[in-house]
Amino acid sequence: MSLRRAIHQHRGPVQALITEGRGILENYCGFIRGLREEEKSLDDQKQQTDIKIMEAYRQTCNQIHQQLTEERDRLLSEVETNHRQNKGAVQSQRDAVLNDVAEMSSACDGAEQGMGREDKEFLSRKAKLDEVVGKFRERIVPILIPTHPAIFEPTEKFTCSLGKVTVPGAASSGAAAMAMGHHHGNKSSTLAPKQRLTFGGEGSDDGQFDFPFGVTVSEKAEIFVADSGNGRIQVFTLHGTFVRKFPAVVPGEQEQCPMDVALDREGNLWVVIRTESEEFAAQYTTQGRLLKKILLKETKNLRQVAVDTKRNQILITQTSGDGDNLQSEVLVLRSDGTLVRTVGQQQGMEVWFITVDGEGHIHVSDREHHLVHTFSEDGQFLFQYGGLGSGEGQLKEPAGICTDRAGNIIVADRGNRRVEMFDKTGRFIKHITTDMSCLCAVAMTPLGQIVVTCAEDNTVTIVSI
Image 1 (cartoon, rainbow, N blue to C red):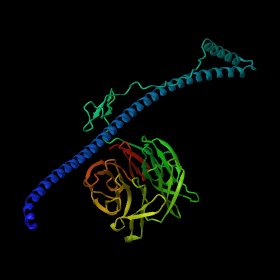
Image 2: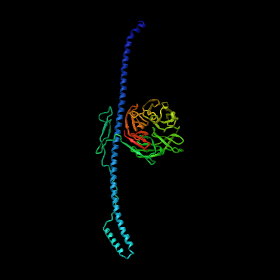
Image 3: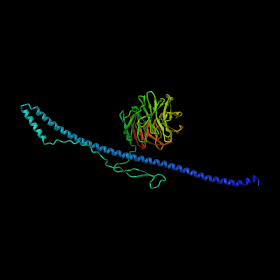
Image 4: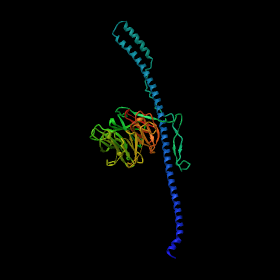
Protein backbone atom coordinates (compact mmCIF):
# COMPACT_ATOMS: atom_id res chain seq x y z
CA MET A 1 0.00 0.00 0.00
CA SER A 2 1.33 3.44 -0.83
CA LEU A 3 2.00 6.02 1.89
CA ARG A 4 -0.60 8.38 0.46
CA ARG A 5 -3.27 5.72 0.52
CA ALA A 6 -2.39 4.74 4.09
CA ILE A 7 -2.62 8.38 5.23
CA HIS A 8 -5.94 8.75 3.44
CA GLN A 9 -7.37 5.67 5.16
CA HIS A 10 -6.26 6.86 8.65
CA ARG A 11 -7.45 10.47 8.38
CA GLY A 12 -11.01 9.61 9.36
CA PRO A 13 -10.11 7.68 12.54
CA VAL A 14 -7.58 10.35 13.54
CA GLN A 15 -10.19 13.10 13.11
CA ALA A 16 -12.61 11.09 15.22
CA LEU A 17 -9.97 10.76 17.95
CA ILE A 18 -9.26 14.50 17.76
CA THR A 19 -12.96 15.28 18.14
CA GLU A 20 -13.22 12.89 21.05
CA GLY A 21 -10.12 14.42 22.68
CA ARG A 22 -11.50 17.94 22.23
CA GLY A 23 -14.71 16.85 23.90
CA ILE A 24 -12.79 15.43 26.84
CA LEU A 25 -10.78 18.67 27.09
CA GLU A 26 -13.99 20.70 27.07
CA ASN A 27 -15.36 18.60 29.91
CA TYR A 28 -12.19 19.23 31.91
CA CYS A 29 -12.26 22.94 31.12
CA GLY A 30 -15.90 23.10 32.16
CA PHE A 31 -14.98 21.39 35.42
CA ILE A 32 -12.16 23.89 35.99
CA ARG A 33 -14.54 26.78 35.30
CA GLY A 34 -16.92 25.32 37.82
CA LEU A 35 -14.13 25.14 40.40
CA ARG A 36 -13.24 28.77 39.74
CA GLU A 37 -16.85 29.80 40.18
CA GLU A 38 -16.98 27.80 43.38
CA GLU A 39 -13.82 29.56 44.62
CA LYS A 40 -15.35 32.93 43.80
CA SER A 41 -18.56 31.95 45.58
CA LEU A 42 -16.59 30.91 48.66
CA ASP A 43 -14.65 34.19 48.60
CA ASP A 44 -17.91 36.17 48.31
CA GLN A 45 -19.47 34.18 51.13
CA LYS A 46 -16.45 34.79 53.34
CA GLN A 47 -16.45 38.52 52.62
CA GLN A 48 -20.18 38.78 53.38
CA THR A 49 -19.72 36.82 56.59
CA ASP A 50 -16.76 38.97 57.63
CA ILE A 51 -18.93 42.05 57.15
CA LYS A 52 -21.78 40.52 59.16
CA ILE A 53 -19.44 39.53 61.98
CA MET A 54 -17.82 42.98 62.14
CA GLU A 55 -21.23 44.68 62.03
CA ALA A 56 -22.56 42.44 64.80
CA TYR A 57 -19.40 43.05 66.80
CA ARG A 58 -19.68 46.79 66.31
CA GLN A 59 -23.36 46.88 67.26
CA THR A 60 -22.73 44.85 70.40
CA CYS A 61 -19.80 47.03 71.45
CA ASN A 62 -21.93 50.12 70.89
CA GLN A 63 -24.77 48.61 72.92
CA ILE A 64 -22.47 47.67 75.78
CA HIS A 65 -20.86 51.12 75.69
CA GLN A 66 -24.30 52.76 75.73
CA GLN A 67 -25.43 50.63 78.67
CA LEU A 68 -22.28 51.32 80.66
CA THR A 69 -22.53 55.02 79.87
CA GLU A 70 -26.13 55.13 81.13
CA GLU A 71 -25.19 53.19 84.27
CA ARG A 72 -22.22 55.50 84.87
CA ASP A 73 -24.40 58.61 84.49
CA ARG A 74 -27.05 57.17 86.82
CA LEU A 75 -24.50 56.32 89.52
CA LEU A 76 -22.81 59.69 89.20
CA SER A 77 -26.22 61.35 89.56
CA GLU A 78 -26.95 59.32 92.70
CA VAL A 79 -23.56 60.20 94.16
CA GLU A 80 -24.11 63.88 93.37
CA THR A 81 -27.58 63.84 95.01
CA ASN A 82 -26.31 62.10 98.16
CA HIS A 83 -23.30 64.37 98.32
CA ARG A 84 -25.53 67.44 98.09
CA GLN A 85 -27.86 66.15 100.80
CA ASN A 86 -25.05 65.12 103.17
CA LYS A 87 -23.18 68.36 102.64
CA GLY A 88 -26.35 70.35 103.22
CA ALA A 89 -26.94 68.52 106.52
CA VAL A 90 -23.36 69.21 107.66
CA GLN A 91 -23.67 72.88 106.73
CA SER A 92 -26.96 73.17 108.66
CA GLN A 93 -25.33 71.67 111.77
CA ARG A 94 -22.37 73.98 111.37
CA ASP A 95 -24.58 77.06 111.09
CA ALA A 96 -26.59 76.06 114.15
CA VAL A 97 -23.45 75.48 116.25
CA LEU A 98 -21.93 78.75 115.04
CA ASN A 99 -25.05 80.58 116.24
CA ASP A 100 -24.74 78.92 119.66
CA VAL A 101 -21.03 79.77 119.79
CA ALA A 102 -21.73 83.38 118.89
CA GLU A 103 -24.40 83.66 121.60
CA MET A 104 -22.22 82.10 124.33
CA SER A 105 -19.17 84.11 123.29
CA SER A 106 -21.13 87.34 123.38
CA ALA A 107 -22.45 86.61 126.88
CA CYS A 108 -18.99 85.71 128.21
CA ASP A 109 -17.35 88.75 126.60
CA GLY A 110 -19.99 91.06 128.08
CA ALA A 111 -19.58 89.62 131.55
CA GLU A 112 -15.80 89.97 131.37
CA GLN A 113 -16.08 93.60 130.34
CA GLY A 114 -18.37 94.35 133.30
CA MET A 115 -16.26 92.58 135.93
CA GLY A 116 -14.55 95.79 136.99
CA ARG A 117 -17.69 97.87 137.18
CA GLU A 118 -19.91 98.41 140.25
CA ASP A 119 -23.26 99.34 138.81
CA LYS A 120 -26.48 97.75 137.76
CA GLU A 121 -25.10 97.01 134.27
CA PHE A 122 -22.80 94.42 135.88
CA LEU A 123 -25.83 92.77 137.47
CA SER A 124 -27.73 92.78 134.16
CA ARG A 125 -24.78 91.16 132.37
CA LYS A 126 -24.55 88.55 135.17
CA ALA A 127 -28.23 87.79 134.70
CA LYS A 128 -27.75 87.44 130.93
CA LEU A 129 -24.76 85.12 131.47
CA ASP A 130 -26.81 83.02 133.95
CA GLU A 131 -29.53 82.70 131.34
CA VAL A 132 -27.21 81.73 128.48
CA VAL A 133 -25.07 79.30 130.51
CA GLY A 134 -28.20 77.72 131.97
CA LYS A 135 -29.61 77.38 128.48
CA PHE A 136 -26.59 75.47 127.23
CA ARG A 137 -25.69 73.66 130.47
CA GLU A 138 -27.90 70.65 129.77
CA ARG A 139 -27.15 70.55 126.09
CA ILE A 140 -24.90 67.85 124.73
CA VAL A 141 -22.21 69.35 122.56
CA PRO A 142 -22.65 67.65 119.15
CA ILE A 143 -19.79 65.41 118.07
CA LEU A 144 -19.59 65.77 114.33
CA ILE A 145 -18.78 62.50 112.59
CA PRO A 146 -17.92 63.11 108.94
CA THR A 147 -20.51 61.54 106.69
CA HIS A 148 -19.36 60.62 103.21
CA PRO A 149 -21.53 59.47 100.31
CA ALA A 150 -21.58 55.73 100.09
CA ILE A 151 -19.47 54.03 97.47
CA PHE A 152 -22.14 52.79 95.11
CA GLU A 153 -22.07 49.43 93.43
CA PRO A 154 -24.10 48.99 90.24
CA THR A 155 -27.62 48.05 91.22
CA GLU A 156 -28.23 46.39 87.88
CA LYS A 157 -26.19 43.68 86.28
CA PHE A 158 -25.99 43.51 82.52
CA THR A 159 -26.68 40.04 81.18
CA CYS A 160 -26.35 38.90 77.61
CA SER A 161 -28.22 36.30 75.63
CA LEU A 162 -26.52 34.80 72.60
CA GLY A 163 -27.42 35.71 69.07
CA LYS A 164 -25.62 34.04 66.19
CA VAL A 165 -24.15 34.98 62.85
CA THR A 166 -23.90 31.76 60.85
CA VAL A 167 -20.83 31.09 58.76
CA PRO A 168 -21.80 29.61 55.36
CA GLY A 169 -21.10 25.90 55.26
CA ALA A 170 -20.79 25.59 59.05
CA ALA A 171 -22.62 22.93 61.03
CA SER A 172 -26.03 23.95 62.36
CA SER A 173 -24.82 23.26 65.90
CA GLY A 174 -23.27 26.74 65.85
CA ALA A 175 -19.71 25.51 66.46
CA ALA A 176 -18.49 27.93 63.79
CA ALA A 177 -20.76 30.82 64.82
CA MET A 178 -19.89 34.00 66.68
CA ALA A 179 -21.97 34.82 69.76
CA MET A 180 -22.97 38.44 70.20
CA GLY A 181 -24.72 40.14 73.13
CA HIS A 182 -28.17 41.61 73.73
CA HIS A 183 -29.14 43.49 76.89
CA HIS A 184 -32.11 42.56 79.06
CA GLY A 185 -33.35 44.76 81.87
CA ASN A 186 -34.99 48.08 82.64
CA LYS A 187 -32.50 50.13 80.66
CA SER A 188 -33.12 50.61 76.97
CA SER A 189 -30.41 49.07 74.81
CA THR A 190 -31.30 51.08 71.70
CA LEU A 191 -28.32 53.06 70.45
CA ALA A 192 -29.02 56.53 69.19
CA PRO A 193 -28.85 56.50 65.35
CA LYS A 194 -25.95 58.93 65.27
CA GLN A 195 -24.58 58.90 68.80
CA ARG A 196 -21.68 61.31 69.11
CA LEU A 197 -19.18 62.43 71.68
CA THR A 198 -17.38 65.78 71.45
CA PHE A 199 -14.43 66.74 73.60
CA GLY A 200 -11.70 69.37 73.72
CA GLY A 201 -12.11 73.13 73.74
CA GLU A 202 -9.67 75.98 73.20
CA GLY A 203 -6.63 76.08 75.45
CA SER A 204 -3.27 74.56 76.23
CA ASP A 205 -4.19 72.36 79.19
CA ASP A 206 -4.35 68.59 78.87
CA GLY A 207 -7.33 67.69 76.68
CA GLN A 208 -7.61 71.19 75.19
CA PHE A 209 -6.61 72.20 71.66
CA ASP A 210 -5.28 75.01 69.56
CA PHE A 211 -6.11 74.17 65.93
CA PRO A 212 -6.40 70.35 66.06
CA PHE A 213 -5.90 69.15 62.50
CA GLY A 214 -4.69 65.65 61.68
CA VAL A 215 -5.97 62.53 63.46
CA THR A 216 -5.37 58.77 63.37
CA VAL A 217 -6.53 55.82 65.51
CA SER A 218 -4.46 52.78 66.46
CA GLU A 219 -5.58 49.14 66.63
CA LYS A 220 -5.41 49.59 70.40
CA ALA A 221 -8.18 52.20 70.03
CA GLU A 222 -5.97 55.16 70.96
CA ILE A 223 -6.76 58.44 69.20
CA PHE A 224 -3.72 60.54 68.18
CA VAL A 225 -4.47 64.22 67.45
CA ALA A 226 -2.06 66.71 65.89
CA ASP A 227 -2.60 69.69 68.23
CA SER A 228 -0.97 72.06 65.77
CA GLY A 229 -1.10 75.38 67.62
CA ASN A 230 0.22 73.82 70.83
CA GLY A 231 3.03 72.01 68.99
CA ARG A 232 2.21 68.58 70.39
CA ILE A 233 0.49 65.25 69.86
CA GLN A 234 -2.30 64.37 72.30
CA VAL A 235 -3.61 60.85 72.88
CA PHE A 236 -7.16 59.96 73.97
CA THR A 237 -9.37 56.92 74.52
CA LEU A 238 -12.53 56.28 72.50
CA HIS A 239 -14.41 57.89 75.40
CA GLY A 240 -12.54 61.17 74.87
CA THR A 241 -10.44 60.67 78.01
CA PHE A 242 -6.99 62.27 77.92
CA VAL A 243 -4.23 59.62 78.14
CA ARG A 244 -0.93 61.37 77.47
CA LYS A 245 0.83 63.92 75.28
CA PHE A 246 4.24 64.52 73.82
CA PRO A 247 5.76 67.54 72.07
CA ALA A 248 6.41 67.32 68.34
CA VAL A 249 10.01 68.24 68.97
CA VAL A 250 13.11 67.63 66.89
CA PRO A 251 16.40 68.83 68.40
CA GLY A 252 17.46 72.24 67.14
CA GLU A 253 14.01 73.26 65.89
CA GLN A 254 11.73 75.92 67.39
CA GLU A 255 7.98 76.62 67.19
CA GLN A 256 7.12 73.37 65.52
CA CYS A 257 3.64 72.90 64.09
CA PRO A 258 2.51 69.27 63.58
CA MET A 259 -0.01 69.14 60.74
CA ASP A 260 -0.98 65.49 60.30
CA VAL A 261 -0.36 62.03 61.78
CA ALA A 262 -0.46 58.43 60.52
CA LEU A 263 0.52 55.01 61.90
CA ASP A 264 2.82 52.62 60.03
CA ARG A 265 2.94 48.80 59.91
CA GLU A 266 5.19 48.60 62.99
CA GLY A 267 2.82 50.77 65.02
CA ASN A 268 5.05 53.87 64.95
CA LEU A 269 3.69 57.34 64.37
CA TRP A 270 4.58 59.53 61.37
CA VAL A 271 4.06 63.27 61.83
CA VAL A 272 4.48 65.98 59.20
CA ILE A 273 5.80 69.14 60.85
CA ARG A 274 6.31 72.74 59.74
CA THR A 275 8.72 75.19 61.35
CA GLU A 276 9.73 78.74 60.45
CA SER A 277 12.68 77.46 58.45
CA GLU A 278 11.77 74.00 57.10
CA GLU A 279 9.29 71.17 56.77
CA PHE A 280 9.92 67.51 57.54
CA ALA A 281 8.36 64.18 58.41
CA ALA A 282 9.31 62.70 61.77
CA GLN A 283 8.80 59.15 63.03
CA TYR A 284 7.99 58.65 66.72
CA THR A 285 7.05 55.75 68.91
CA THR A 286 3.50 56.02 70.23
CA GLN A 287 5.04 57.13 73.53
CA GLY A 288 6.74 60.09 71.82
CA ARG A 289 10.35 58.98 71.37
CA LEU A 290 11.86 60.41 68.15
CA LEU A 291 13.14 57.72 65.76
CA LYS A 292 14.02 59.58 62.56
CA LYS A 293 13.53 62.76 60.53
CA ILE A 294 13.05 63.19 56.76
CA LEU A 295 13.56 66.69 55.35
CA LEU A 296 10.94 67.89 52.83
CA LYS A 297 10.64 70.78 50.39
CA GLU A 298 8.46 73.74 51.33
CA THR A 299 4.80 73.31 50.37
CA LYS A 300 2.03 75.85 49.82
CA ASN A 301 -0.79 73.94 51.53
CA LEU A 302 -0.98 72.20 54.88
CA ARG A 303 0.82 68.93 54.34
CA GLN A 304 -0.86 65.54 54.92
CA VAL A 305 0.58 62.06 55.50
CA ALA A 306 -0.66 58.49 55.05
CA VAL A 307 0.99 55.07 55.20
CA ASP A 308 0.66 52.17 52.75
CA THR A 309 0.89 49.42 55.38
CA LYS A 310 0.93 46.78 52.63
CA ARG A 311 4.31 48.04 51.38
CA ASN A 312 5.23 50.12 54.45
CA GLN A 313 5.66 53.21 52.28
CA ILE A 314 5.05 56.77 53.46
CA LEU A 315 2.80 59.02 51.33
CA ILE A 316 3.08 62.78 51.79
CA THR A 317 1.23 65.54 49.93
CA GLN A 318 3.09 68.45 48.37
CA THR A 319 1.98 71.59 46.52
CA SER A 320 4.37 73.96 44.76
CA GLY A 321 4.07 76.95 42.44
CA ASP A 322 2.05 80.17 42.71
CA GLY A 323 -1.39 81.44 41.73
CA ASP A 324 -2.82 79.57 38.76
CA ASN A 325 0.39 77.54 38.42
CA LEU A 326 -0.02 75.49 41.58
CA GLN A 327 1.13 71.91 41.13
CA SER A 328 0.03 69.21 43.56
CA GLU A 329 1.34 65.70 43.91
CA VAL A 330 1.78 62.84 46.34
CA LEU A 331 5.29 61.78 47.29
CA VAL A 332 5.69 58.03 47.86
CA LEU A 333 8.71 57.42 50.10
CA ARG A 334 10.42 54.48 51.70
CA SER A 335 10.78 54.67 55.45
CA ASP A 336 14.37 55.90 55.01
CA GLY A 337 13.16 58.88 52.94
CA THR A 338 14.09 57.50 49.50
CA LEU A 339 11.62 58.67 46.82
CA VAL A 340 9.83 55.77 45.10
CA ARG A 341 7.54 57.78 42.82
CA THR A 342 5.24 60.77 42.61
CA VAL A 343 1.50 60.33 42.08
CA GLY A 344 -1.08 62.64 40.52
CA GLN A 345 1.27 65.23 39.09
CA GLN A 346 -0.47 65.09 35.70
CA GLN A 347 -3.97 65.12 37.15
CA GLY A 348 -4.21 68.90 37.59
CA MET A 349 -5.62 68.48 41.09
CA GLU A 350 -5.06 70.42 44.29
CA VAL A 351 -4.26 67.75 46.87
CA TRP A 352 -5.58 68.24 50.39
CA PHE A 353 -6.11 65.05 52.41
CA ILE A 354 -4.96 61.54 51.53
CA THR A 355 -5.51 57.92 52.61
CA VAL A 356 -4.49 54.43 51.45
CA ASP A 357 -6.89 51.46 51.65
CA GLY A 358 -6.09 47.83 52.42
CA GLU A 359 -5.44 47.05 48.75
CA GLY A 360 -2.91 49.87 48.43
CA HIS A 361 -5.21 52.18 46.42
CA ILE A 362 -4.51 55.88 47.02
CA HIS A 363 -7.46 58.23 47.60
CA VAL A 364 -6.96 62.01 47.47
CA SER A 365 -9.44 64.80 48.25
CA ASP A 366 -9.29 67.78 45.87
CA ARG A 367 -10.97 70.80 47.45
CA GLU A 368 -10.37 73.10 44.49
CA HIS A 369 -12.32 70.89 42.07
CA HIS A 370 -14.61 69.29 44.70
CA LEU A 371 -13.50 65.78 43.74
CA VAL A 372 -11.93 62.64 45.12
CA HIS A 373 -9.26 61.01 42.93
CA THR A 374 -8.36 57.32 43.20
CA PHE A 375 -5.06 55.84 42.03
CA SER A 376 -3.75 52.27 41.92
CA GLU A 377 -0.99 51.17 44.29
CA ASP A 378 1.47 51.83 41.45
CA GLY A 379 0.22 55.38 41.02
CA GLN A 380 -1.95 54.92 37.91
CA PHE A 381 -5.08 57.07 37.81
CA LEU A 382 -8.23 54.93 38.11
CA PHE A 383 -11.27 57.21 38.49
CA GLN A 384 -12.68 60.28 40.22
CA TYR A 385 -16.06 61.17 41.70
CA GLY A 386 -17.93 63.95 43.44
CA GLY A 387 -18.30 67.33 41.74
CA LEU A 388 -19.58 70.60 43.16
CA GLY A 389 -23.04 70.36 44.71
CA SER A 390 -25.04 69.26 47.73
CA GLY A 391 -26.89 66.31 46.22
CA GLU A 392 -26.16 62.67 46.92
CA GLY A 393 -22.64 61.86 45.76
CA GLN A 394 -21.72 65.52 45.24
CA LEU A 395 -19.10 67.36 47.29
CA LYS A 396 -18.10 70.86 48.29
CA GLU A 397 -14.52 71.41 49.42
CA PRO A 398 -13.92 67.79 50.50
CA ALA A 399 -11.39 67.54 53.33
CA GLY A 400 -10.47 64.51 55.46
CA ILE A 401 -10.71 61.05 53.93
CA CYS A 402 -10.32 57.49 55.25
CA THR A 403 -11.49 53.95 54.47
CA ASP A 404 -13.13 51.19 56.51
CA ARG A 405 -12.29 47.47 56.57
CA ALA A 406 -14.68 46.77 53.70
CA GLY A 407 -12.90 49.31 51.48
CA ASN A 408 -15.67 51.92 51.65
CA ILE A 409 -14.44 55.50 51.45
CA ILE A 410 -15.47 58.07 54.07
CA VAL A 411 -15.14 61.74 53.06
CA ALA A 412 -15.49 64.84 55.24
CA ASP A 413 -17.68 66.99 52.94
CA ARG A 414 -16.56 70.20 54.60
CA GLY A 415 -18.51 72.72 52.54
CA ASN A 416 -21.78 70.81 53.04
CA ARG A 417 -21.09 70.20 56.78
CA ARG A 418 -21.54 66.44 56.46
CA VAL A 419 -19.67 63.14 56.25
CA GLU A 420 -20.30 60.91 53.21
CA MET A 421 -19.70 57.23 52.48
CA PHE A 422 -18.83 55.85 49.03
CA ASP A 423 -18.06 52.29 47.98
CA LYS A 424 -14.66 51.29 46.59
CA THR A 425 -15.78 52.24 43.05
CA GLY A 426 -16.84 55.77 44.06
CA ARG A 427 -20.58 55.01 44.14
CA PHE A 428 -22.47 57.00 46.80
CA ILE A 429 -23.76 54.83 49.66
CA LYS A 430 -25.12 57.16 52.36
CA HIS A 431 -24.78 60.27 54.51
CA ILE A 432 -23.12 59.32 57.79
CA THR A 433 -23.96 62.65 59.41
CA THR A 434 -25.33 65.88 57.97
CA ASP A 435 -25.09 68.45 60.77
CA MET A 436 -21.40 68.91 61.61
CA SER A 437 -20.47 72.51 62.35
CA CYS A 438 -17.04 72.13 60.74
CA LEU A 439 -14.79 69.30 59.58
CA CYS A 440 -11.09 68.80 58.97
CA ALA A 441 -9.54 65.34 59.23
CA VAL A 442 -11.43 62.07 59.63
CA ALA A 443 -10.26 58.64 60.84
CA MET A 444 -11.85 55.23 61.40
CA THR A 445 -11.75 53.45 64.78
CA PRO A 446 -11.41 49.67 65.22
CA LEU A 447 -15.04 49.60 66.38
CA GLY A 448 -16.31 51.22 63.18
CA GLN A 449 -16.83 54.76 64.52
CA ILE A 450 -15.38 57.83 62.85
CA VAL A 451 -13.30 60.52 64.54
CA VAL A 452 -13.53 64.05 63.13
CA THR A 453 -11.35 67.05 64.01
CA CYS A 454 -12.60 70.63 63.92
CA ALA A 455 -9.80 73.19 63.90
CA GLU A 456 -12.17 76.19 64.12
CA ASP A 457 -14.00 74.92 67.24
CA ASN A 458 -10.90 73.27 68.73
CA THR A 459 -12.83 70.04 69.24
CA VAL A 460 -12.72 66.38 68.29
CA THR A 461 -15.96 64.42 67.71
CA ILE A 462 -16.53 60.66 67.67
CA VAL A 463 -19.59 59.62 65.61
CA SER A 464 -21.14 56.16 65.38
CA ILE A 465 -21.96 55.02 61.86
